Image 1 (cartoon, rainbow, N blue to C red):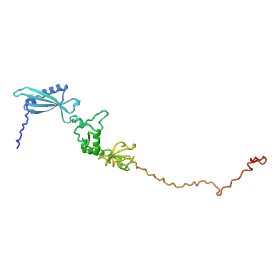
Image 2: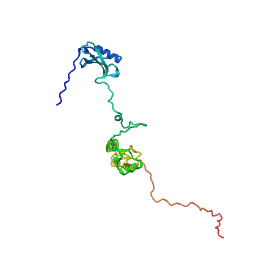
Image 3: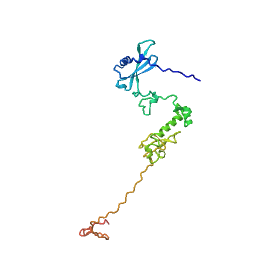
Image 4: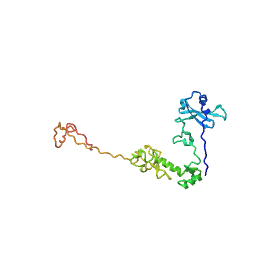
Length: 276
């Protein structure tokens, strides 16, 4: 059985509590300007306590000056122990510090930037430990072209979830309005390996996802088999103008008549026929 630990409540020292003016002078000396109203006194221990004053600097709204004063045993003189600026309730604070590896977000990498991958990155595994085609990996290593690390199962699952739940998945608005899924499109290039049954790349230059990975049940209006059904024009009734008319004769056309005279004048001599 663990014995209970007894804690003693700090007792307010009257001399330290009465040193508010001394604490204010110390706070103003550190701030370089007058400080605000006295916000209380808190005992810290035997003959030890802290006075609080509101900060008046506009850049530190909600902050307060904390001046700790102390008194030695059997002494009557109170001295200033430390002066610090501390955030109060509602103070503007910087966000909690995060290491760079946790701050990087997709799209942050620019031209010339290098993103170091951790040695123990769970998304990667040694190439000899995983692969869709072990024979291919073995030959590549023998030829000196093999990769040191490849996607692990966790890395593959993360990528699949990210792609499927993102703008290239079936829930995207453009996919909901598509005439057919990408898996049935002639421009769909199926990936090889473990991700092949569910993902491929779009090769339609007119599609918004051209050159990007899309799920087989994604879709858009640029599907290769999308066709617009021709609508038949509305039938228009024949219009007859009965306000005026023209009389015409109905019958066979007249026969053509020969022009008067022939093509040769009877008074002219005949042409030789060329007989000997």
